[in-house]
Length: 386
Image (cartoon, rainbow, N blue to C red; front, side):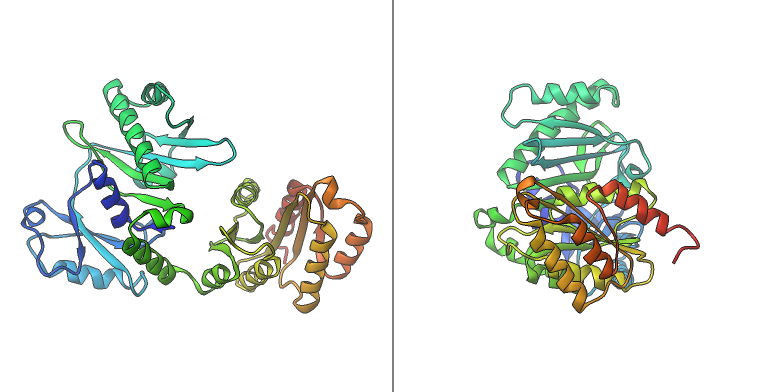
């Protein structure tokens, strides 16, 4: 479950992490401690990134109490109905950094990511430093400090290392799978303050945390989902819509990220990202295809990539499901299909016959190598090709 910025900052404050002072609107009266500041910032509480570039973060004058209301109306243009607002003191950092912690299930640890350039600059800067941390192991601060001392002055790298360990404890206590602070600001005098916070909590841990806050987060998340994303959740999987060239059908976050990166390496971008939902049904292939084909009907989407990994489920069943779906709904864009199957999954499977049947059903290519598929998509998406 994703938390809005205000919820994430309240969580950080409970654990003693410094954040700007602020209030959620509407409020009958703004605290004098805020009005006395040089300025305030009004932030729309949405779950997407890039709010500053989208006009969802605005500076307001503390001397004019009505200006915040006017800014709210301006924000509601590019934002959506039901958006909450956070009004907080403006902070003048001397340095902005990026810091994140996320669960790495493959390596069974917490991945620490850090960039000396935070805020919007993190997207244009160098790739972040990555370090795998094992909670509870002595010397974590020293380990992080050693990784950062080439990027920051010694005193600052030591403070950031200590902050990272504190945040790691927050992550464990709050059952978070992602904790991202961008920017982490250094103020005059060396104090560190979290100016923004992005967090994702493990759905399975919801019962251990405040029920009202959990319900509020779920309600807000529901408001901000697109119709396709909401339909996917009802079908038992997670879908994220993105502006891109290729509607991507996959299962599992790791495979989805791999395919998204592979597309990016060839000048393409995914128009969708799919993941398995905890406790979801075993079979969601048709619902995923339905969502991808709906996306492929939109201008700008040039192809559909369906890729699955099979450990034990028979590949023949998945092929039959795909053929049955295509008989009902032909692909609106060129469809590329791939399977990585273990021997037990491909036993008794006639690959040559499958290729012929899929080709007859309109599939542009069937191949077990995702790189070959992506290269074929890139060739088909070159300017001048339809």
